[in-house]
Amino acid sequence: MENLTVRELFDRLGRPRVRAALFGDHEGLESDAPGFKTVALHVSKGVIPAAWFDVVDALCKEDGLETPRYLFSFKRPDGPVTGAGRDAA
Image 1 (cartoon, one colour):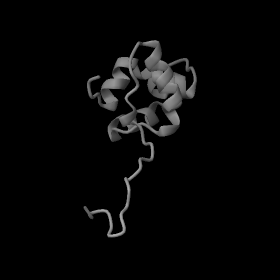
Image 2 (image 1 turned 180 degrees about the horizontal axis):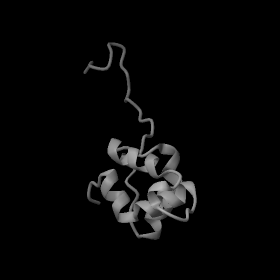
Image 3 (image 1 turned 90 degrees about the vertical axis):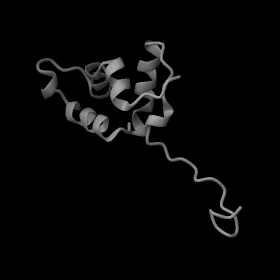
Image 4 (image 1 turned 90 degrees about the horizontal axis):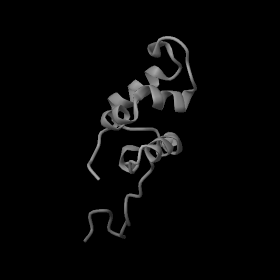
């Protein structure tokens, strides 16, 4: 799988579609829709909130895409800490 950015993923899925899946349908201008600015903010930050994973995962599956977990703000383990600290061999 290629390494996508949040911008590339959301553009492939369709930003209005992502926004609607997260915040609900909206009649009228997309820029006035609930969540429009929130989605744009996370695109500019380059990280998707972990709480959005299930929704984005479902959209990816609908489009036959593998969900890029590295784009989400999941807490990641720092790895084992040895007695002498993280830099110990």
